[in-house]
Length: 89
Image (cartoon, rainbow, N blue to C red; front, side):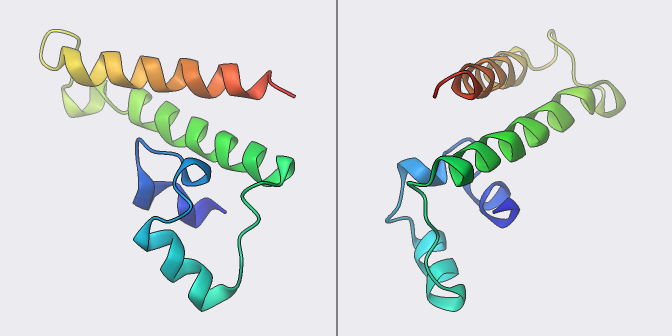
């Protein structure tokens, strides 16, 4: 499942079952049960991990709120969305 996060960055595989990358992934390795709650939770946790890494790496890359406010805001929104999704049944 981790393989589905970075290629679909800022998007959710479970929301785009017809994405070309996902179709190729499934053609090579078999179906991915995107409707399975456990799979959806894992994908959410992997996205959360990626967005946290992108956030904590910003200072070492000289990215600040002043230098790139759009990136900071987008990552904050994505983190909020993934955290909220974890509380859903």
